[in-house]
Image (cartoon, rainbow, N blue to C red):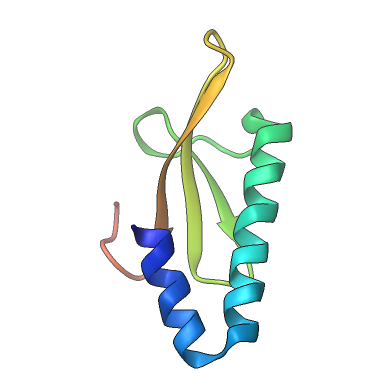
Length: 83
């Protein structure tokens, strides 16, 4: 939902912005999948990868014992502080 809303916002401005945004998100997801413990701990046992070209972070939880991870949010840096 957050990702779709953000992409809609970028797409309204330009198709190129939408492509760059989604490319940054998918690149971030691939980097997390390759090395989930690389990014620092965040709140409540989560980790956070900051998208540097866009005001968003990917918030996720890695479960080493279950060999899985869950993306919990695509959080905007200025909306809902502490979210």
